[in-house]
Length: 208
Image 1: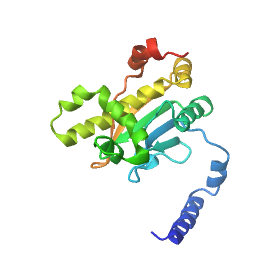
Image 2: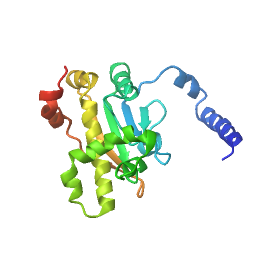
Image 3: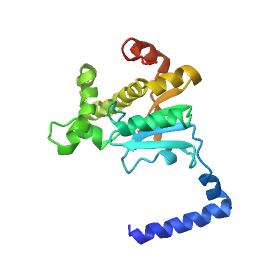
């Protein structure tokens, strides 16, 4: 797509929004009050607002390769802290997707240069669930299961943070793990049991 086309699309979009509501952009400029923090993958085929059906201002969005919430990634930790402490979101969603090239790359025995330390986090998830994953003979099904397990582990990483633990006690913050099936367009709820996980990790990871 030509870059000039982008600006033309933007102009048309502005016109359409102003026809619907002359104060649309004035309202946006007044601030945000999102209910959701959405942590997803940077994959160009997956857009948070479209798959959730939400409008600007309803979801605070953070994306990276393979929807990771690494405990030593200051960017991810800052986003979680800001969303919980300042925006007071009610829900945190970690959303992975099938056919994720980041997950696929982590399953290969290959030197991927600068991506190595990042994808090592995914490989750690594989190591934690090696017995289950190796028991799946079909490669595509094993790949999809790793996508799901990675979402689960990133939800656990979210729960490990002090801000989330505090909000969980004070305002019943909820954590959700979803998978977007690109082949069907459907969202799959992995039904992450926040209370159960919190109880299981309390002995080691409790901060508050």
